Every structure is written in structure tokens, then in C-alpha cells.
Image 1 (cartoon, helix red, strand yellow):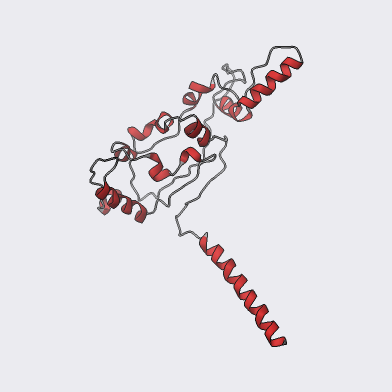
Image 2 (cartoon, helix red, strand yellow):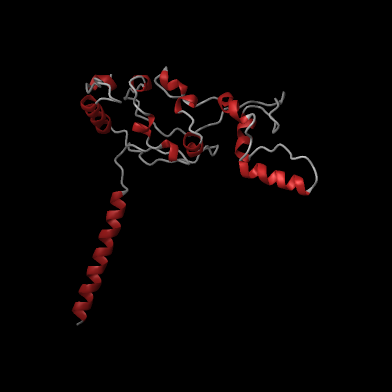
Length: 217
């Protein structure tokens, strides 16, 4: 009887260990694989809101992708094209309107905490006016998609033939905080090139190279 109980306990312990090992192994990554990397950024920018709900084109902010190797990060003045007028969320504006109505005064023009970071970096006061004494400072965004130095990648070659941003970056329009969706490994890229050569891109025949020297030279 005792031997049977010990056997059951040991079996359960072994099963639990295997389950724990499997869960850890399933989340393991090869060296250099940053799939799922989702750092907290200095400003809580929502791709879900901008690219998803508002249907903003990726290239409006990342215009460098059409003319450069790098898609680039939009400068502050691109953000201010909208955010000189849009300064806070609808909920915050409505809350201020209700409070102003109760206090029998005009609503104040408020700026959200996250947009205040943008204004501060641009040397603007909360009203959007230039502060002469201010020192401008670019927002230090944390880079997410970071290929090794020995890999050459050019956005132009991909954008020009109609490769959708989501092909590499995943459903950005659903991401509240940006993360690395694909492995971006060499095998992943090569398989994409092979598949594109067979199926084409948006009905267009392409000749995506699988020569090593294309990306490593």
C-alpha cells in the first residue's frame, strides 16, 4: 500500500515537472530571436487607435519606408499636424465640459499627460505656444525591430512591390503597444521570398532573391 502511494506521488511529481518544463521550453527563444518583444515606450502611443480606429496609413508617419532603407520614426512636427488641435481624449474633454458647466465657467483647453510629454520635448507650453527658454529634446523611443549589423534590409525594395507592412510587422492596427510579431530570422525571410516568387505579391510576379549576397555583403 505504501509503495503504491509513493509511486502515485512520484508519478504526479514527474508529470508536474514535465508540464512545467514544457511551458518553459515553449517560451524559449533562440539567441537573437526577439519575437514578442514589447517594451514600454516613453510615450504611450497606441497603434490600435491611430492605425486601427482612425485608419491612418502607416506611411503617413513612417514615410522614410518609401525612399530609404529605414522606415524611420516620425518627427514631432508630424504629430503636431493633428495634435495642435487634438490635445486629449474624448473622455477627458467631456469631463472638463461637465465640470465647467457645474462651475458656470468656460471649459479649459486641457492637454493629456502623454501629449504633454510631446509638447515638452518640442519646447512648447501646455497651450501649444513656444517657450523661448525651453531646450528641445527628441523623445527617446525604444527600438523594437533590430536586425544584426551583418544583415542588410531595405524598406524601399519591399514597399515598392506592394509588400504590406503587416507581412513583417503583424496586425499593427490591433496593437495597443507595439511588439515584434515575426521572428525576422533568416529562414523566415528566405521562406517569404520563396513563397512570393511562386504566388506573387498582390497579383504581381516578383523575383525576390535568395542569394546570400543580397542581404549579407
